[in-house]
Length: 241
Image (cartoon, rainbow, N blue to C red; front, side):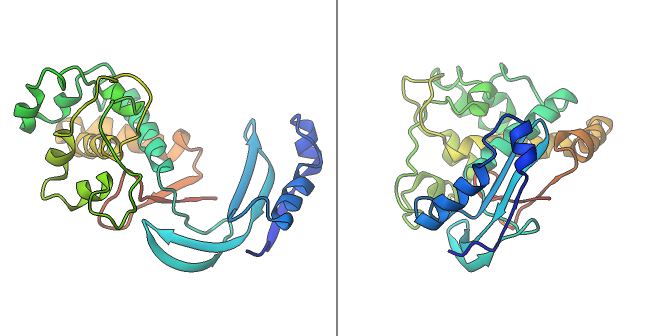
């Protein structure tokens, strides 16, 4: 890994309450090998960036190697499960504009076509909030390699009906407790966002949703792209500039 560029602001770091030597310490960690495979570091407080660092290294797109990349402010980067947080942020914006149900609503209200699954007493207790906070208590295994068809996310992506496959998963008695972070939850939420924004009866709210994304949601600095097939659980590659 090479270290092509860094942009420190010693004065800004100190003014924001950080060690003015933070940039030098970062470089020392990289040069010693203590910090390995670090591609990008952006550090900010109160909307002020005081450390910006770009390196070079191997990257991949959802498990597919794309080679050695020299990263800079215009480089798309694979985010993996950070994508889940982006979906939750978008749900919050849609909720504020009245496009989607509140977190305490039943999850299966988003999936009326799976009424047979919703009839299960163990599933009827699941709320949208459980999906947003990843406290579903689902049996979900992503510890297997992503080339293994028994990896839960891969099994969901390969299923003829991704929603039926993932919604029918067994729940453990730990509903409401932190545990596994199933990619399925973000896929469910992303579908509800897509359908809500396309609903002709809510077109004015959908436009407000779009305006919020363009203005305040990410202060105009986040552009999210996704390559087919859509992978709202772990496959978005955002550009932050």
